[in-house]
Every structure is written in structure tokens, then in C-alpha cells.
Length: 409
Length: 148
Ligand SMILES: Cc1cc2nc3c(=O)[nH]c(=O)nc-3n(C[C@H](O)[C@H](O)[C@H](O)COP(=O)(O)OP(=O)(O)OC[C@H]3O[C@@H](n4cnc5c(N)ncnc54)[C@H](O)[C@@H]3O)c2cc1C
Image (tube, rainbow over all chains, first blue to last red; front, side):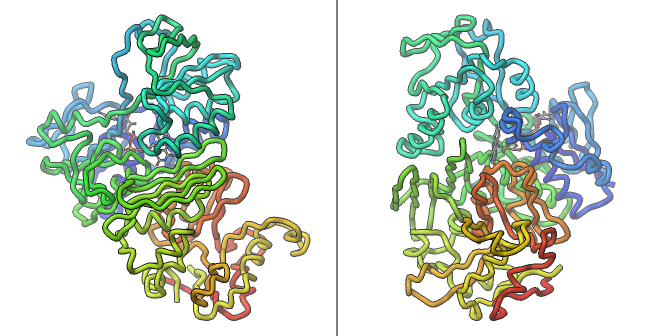
């Protein structure tokens, strides 16, 4: 009987276990999970703070899932991987031999060195349910919350806390919010929405020094706070593979079958970097769909099946207080733009294909654009004049619809 | 499992399916009471190019209940799941992140006007009991068929 080991207990790990079980129902499947709860919908932690969900609803799989699928869950951390002897060593010193292993370790907060940070008593990151619980405990209705980082995670945290604390201030070194996915115009629209809800911003500014409960900013401003949230960024957890001699960049390098450069070692999810078909380069695409699909693909291949995941694209659906920004691909090539009252639609065309888009406010049916990117559909085969204005299936040929849409005649 | 099959050459573009859908999902008895004067959010939508006159193709798009639904795999809240071959939505879990709108290749998941999303659930659990769009289609452009 074979033994498949999966390191990391998130959604990529579960996707992997399900992939293995779709091919092989009898071999041993072991998940080594580093958190106190089995896999949960991580993006829900901000909605938890808002009171829109609870931990039961957040569970990624129902209670009996692991037992029913004969998945052994070990709550521990893997500390090393030896690809020559096919073993994983746990923090307690135990080793497990594997036939194939998948590294699905996700990412951890990146905290740049900041003077005086050690002296801040009440601080947390915002990546785990444990962080959300800590934050919930720490805040009162008049807490002053200071969030360092105006990216997706920092702003989701701000939205989650809005209305249950006294004030929220967010700072970022970048001159705009969501700087990795939006440009100045688009970011400005989102920022305005957040400001309408009382969230204050200090952009293009950074902390030069903490003095207990005061942040002295580079700009000279002093910010007093009760609770500090560090949401500067994340780093992929690559060390298990890197230390074992595998190739890593910003993430663990994988091919379209989710194989690393080490024998019988696979990787998936936020810890991995794969080809982004919209730009042709390799990237970490840290989003749920890629984690689930990549994990499943790895699992199928580990168990001797055949699968590939070769159409990953970076994409994001993010919204605050009812204003949504949907983006995908790369913002490269010729741009088509349409601006309305609080809405922005931008499409980017390169080499006869849609390479990316950015939609704010008016987002209906955006997935049709995403599929143009993912499936690398030449725009000469569709009515792009029509599609540019509004996504529709009419913009495609009847043959395309019949071929791709289930139940279509 | 029976699914709604679209015969696009038979679609008249009459939009009846939209009204039947909205009514079936309204939970209100009496079509007029359910729909009159209200903004409706049907889970099936007719594409007719708003009379752009470019071509006379019209058809109705609703969830295709894909075998391997990327919407369910991408859902960040667990609201979208596959049950007996149908992609269903638990609206009490939906937080309105619109990830599904971002990934559905056919644009078959719609916003509901209240911050969550709606999609075709084949009328399995509403007052119609079986697809109201099919039952009311005057030209058999929508049929209920066993698909594999
Ligand atoms: C606040 C927030 C909002 C988000 N919103 C969205 C969104 O709207 N849409 C979207 O698509 N994505 C969103 N994401 C991203 C999404 O959560 C991730 O892409 C997804 O969780 C990645 O899954 P994963 O399994 O690869 O990694 P993770 O979920 O990070 O899981 C990895 C697990 O591995 C464990 N681990 C690490 N090292 C070890 C070790 N050595 N041994 C054992 N276990 C280990 C970790 O403790 C962790 O539990 C959000 C993330 C956050 C934090």
C-alpha cells in the first residue's frame, strides 16, 4: 500500500487529498496540518469579524469528511523533507515515509524590520482564524485600530472591523490602495468608498518608528493606536522544498502537473509559483481557485492519474461595502476604457487576445472575459466589438456555444 | 439528472422564461402580486443584443450545471456546492464576494440586488418544483432533457 503525504492543512491540501481519492481509494493519505482547525474558508475571516459567518459555516468540509475519506489528519508542523529517502520529519522528531508528497504550506505574513515593533503590546497579523479571534478579543467599540498595509488583506480587515471599533487608520508605502491589482484611477474609486465609511488613509507613507502605542510616520505625522494590524504582505512558505534542494523563486516552482524539481515532490496553492498564461511569466497566484484546482491536479498525478493545470491566471474579486472590483490577467497591450459614475471598465488586448481586465462597479458576467483570457481565445473568432461593450455569449459563434456550453443545441 | 437544454434557433426572444423564473423563485403566490411593479432578478437571462439589429440570434442563458463547476471550486464561503449533479447556492452563506461572477465562463451567475448572487437551481426547491422556464417556453426553445 502506498502512502501519500500532504503538508499543510488548507484548501490546496484538501483539494490534493480529494484528487488522490478520485484515483486511489485505498492507499494511505496523511495530511500534516499546521493550524488548530482543519481546513476552513480562509477568506471568511473578515466576514467573521463583521458577524456574517461563524466557525461552523467556515469549515471547508463537513465534520465527517476526513474519516469518510480515510484521510489521516496530523496536527503538527513538518520541519524537513528529504527527497532522497522519501521522508518528512515532524516537529516532534517523528518521520513519515512517503511514496509521493505534496507541499501545500501556503504563506506567512511578511513583517519588515520596524524600529520599536517589539515594544507594541497589542499587535496581530490577519491571515488565520486565530488572528481573527485575537483581534476580536483585542478590540472594543472605541479602539483605535492602525493597519499597516492597504492591500487586499489589510483592507478586508478594515472592512471587517468597521462599525465595531472607534477608528481605523490604514497606511501604505504605495501611493494608492490595492496597489498590486489597481492603478491610481481605479484605486481612487475604491478608496473613496472606504473613506465614506470612515476609514482613514495615510498613503505613500510608512512607519519610521513605534513608540509603544504611537506610530511615528515618515511624513512626520504621529498616529496613536490601541491595536496594530500588520498586513504588509505575505511570503510563500518554500523552505521545506528549498532546503531539500528544490528550485524555488518567490514560490516553489512547479510545472503544469504541479511537480516540483524534486522527485515525487509536488506543490500547490499559495506556496507555489506556476506559469501565468496571461503574461507568460511565472508567478505566485495566491487565490482560492488556483489553490483548489492546483491541489486537485497534484493529487491526481501523485496517485498515478494524469491531470494538468495549465490555465492559471491571476484574478481577484474584491469588494468593500457593496462596491466591487473584478480583475484578471495582465494589464498589458492596447487598452479599451469606459468610465461611468463610480464605474470603470478596462480591457487590455495584446497579440490578438484579451490579456487582462479591470472592472469596477459594473461587473456583471465578468467571467466571460476571464474565459477569453484563460482559454486564450483569438479575438478574431469572436465579435469583440460587442463583447467589449458588455460581456455576452452572443459575441461568440454558435459553434463555440454548442461546443463549450453543456446542454446547448 | 435532467437539465435545461437551450435550442437557440427556436428562441423567439420573448423573455417569458425570465418572468416565469422570477415568479417561481419569488415564494409569492400569484404572478402579478409577485412581479408587478418590482424589479425582477431572474436566474435566466435572454440575450437579444437589445435590438442592435446586428443579427437576429436570441437565446436564454442560465447555469449549465457544469460537470466540473469552477464556480463551486472558487467559492470562498462554501455557498456554492454540487448536489446530485446540480450546482446549488446556499444564500445564507453567500457573502457577495462575486468570485463566481469572475469565473463563470458563461456569465450565468447574477447579482441579486441585495448583495448576494443568484443562479439557476433547476427549480428543485422552489414553488415550481421543476424548471419553470421550460414549462412556460412557448416555442420549445428550452427543454428538459437527460444529459450525460
Ligand atoms: C483575509 C484574506 C482574504 C482573502 N480573500 C480571498 C478572496 O476573496 N478570494 C480568493 O480567491 N482568495 C482569497 N484569499 C486567499 C486564499 O485564502 C488563499 O489563496 C488560500 O487559502 C490558499 O490555500 P492554500 O491551501 O494554498 O494555503 P493556506 O490556506 O495558507 O493553507 C496552508 C496551511 O499550511 C499550514 N502549514 C504551513 N507550513 C506548514 C508546515 N511546515 N507543516 C504543516 N503545516 C504547515 C499553514 O498553517 C496553513 O494552515 C484571502 C486570504 C486572506 C488571508
